[in-house]
Each structure stands twice: as C-alpha cells, then as structure tokens.
Image 1 (cartoon, rainbow, N blue to C red):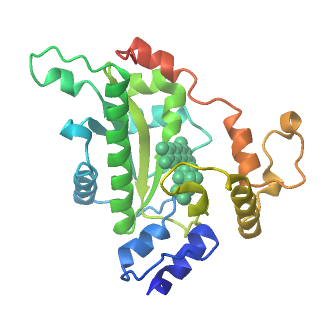
Image 2 (spheres, rainbow, N blue to C red):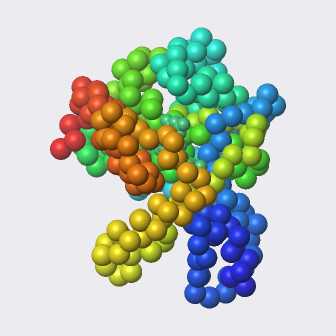
Length: 274
Ligand SMILES: Cc1cc2nc3c(=O)[nH]c(=O)nc-3n(C[C@H](O)[C@H](O)[C@H](O)COP(=O)(O)O)c2cc1C
C-alpha cells in the first residue's frame, strides 16, 4: 500500500521513499507531504470564528511540562500593523495578509501565576518557551492548511526586535518566535523539495558519513526541478558559481548574520541564559 504516497514523496523529496511496509492511505498526511508556504493571498476574508478555531488548535499543541509558555498576539489595528510592516518593505505579505498573528515565547507568565519567586530567565526557561511557541506556530499552520488557508511564518521580526517589541508592547521575558501571515491563497504556490531522509534521519547513532554525497545529489535534483542559478547571492563577495544549488545558496545566506541584536535585547529584558 506504500504506493499511496509515491506521488507525494516524489513531490517532496524528488525520489521514491521506501516506507518499509504497508501503511494506510490518509488524505491529511498526503496534504502534509504536499504542504507549502503561501505568501500571496486573495481578498477573501477569513472569518473571526475561523481565526479563533485556528488559535484554539494552535494552543492544543504539546507543551513542555504543561508550563504553557506560548502566547500569541493577533495584530488587528491597522496603524500598528502598518508600522510593523514598514520595518520589512521587502516582505509585503506582512502588511497584506488578511490575518497576522505573532507567536511569542512567554517565560513571564510562569513567574506571575503565584507569589512563589520563580526565576525563569535561564536558558532552560528561554528554550522551553521558544519550543512551546514554535509548536503552537506549526500547529496553527497545519490547522490553517487543513481548512484551505495559506500561511507564512515570519521570523524576520527578530531583526528589528527593539521596534517590534515597542509596537507590540512586549514586557520582559516575552519575545517573538515568529509572526504568521494567514489568508486564502491567491496562487497554487510551489513545493519546496527537502533533503532526503537518508541525510536527516540517523539510525541508532548519529553519522554523517554519507552527507556530502546526499547533499550533492539533492542539489542536483532540486536544480533540475527549479533552478536558482540566475539568482546567485552576492556574486561580488562570493563569485559566480558554475553550479549554484541549494547548499551554495544556503551557505551564502548563512554567511550574512541575521537577528544580530536579538541576544542583546533578550539579555536586557530578563534573560540571563545561565
Ligand atoms: C521559523 C520560521 C520562520 C520563517 N520566517 C520567514 C520570514 O520571515 N519570511 C518569509 O517570507 N518566510 C519565512 N519562513 C518560511 C520559510 O522560508 C519556508 O518555510 C521555507 O522556505 C520552506 O518552504 P515551505 O514551507 O514552502 O516548504 C519561515 C519559516 C519558519 C519555519
């Protein structure tokens, strides 16, 4: 029965994936395998009740120790949204999406729920709050996609953390993990091919001996489906590569630091990271 997922595996990985046994056909899993980020939305409004439903689904995500350290802001006030969007002119979907949410790591609430002197600014508190917010974010995305909406997480918020914190009135120990654009998609979008499971899933112990070959083959598969050769990043700095694939593109991207003020902001707003 594994052939049920072959088309989806091809779309996602560009190769057949042997599941090693029979599995049931499940339409939702197929949809997850075919999921894609959407950055352009139609004018069709998203009802208030649906947004509430998606938030309820988001906050049904697992939570480390049941500490419930995720929070979200629904940004509705036009002026405030415009001020936020103006910080990121190259991502117009931040201002255009019918719905904009911000998922927050909230290490503050735990300190406030009783008079006990909880100190939650260590790395553990930060990490747990981040993971909770990320799980809520992705649960919201999958829930939204399940009902036909498109979604785009927005982590660039952290690149202007001071201004974003001011616009959203964030107190100490509350920080954005990512925004989330939601709306009915205006176009089909495209499936971003992923590294093969051979490169990302290890058996019994970590081992990256085959990684070079796996990434090289992945680069070639991805290039065949969707070449980015004519969009080389910063050729003045890195030169023009003869073959320009995912790995070269991502390495170049990672060479330009992002979110450089984030650590200093967090340290000035309640986190010691001890
Ligand atoms: C935590 C997180 C932050 C992201 N931030 C942004 C962002 O700021 N702007 C944007 O356009 N896309 C953002 N994305 C979307 C990614 O670029 C996208 O997920 C990735 O290219 C893979 O594409 P896919 O989701 O269609 O498979 C973000 C995704 C994640 C998970």
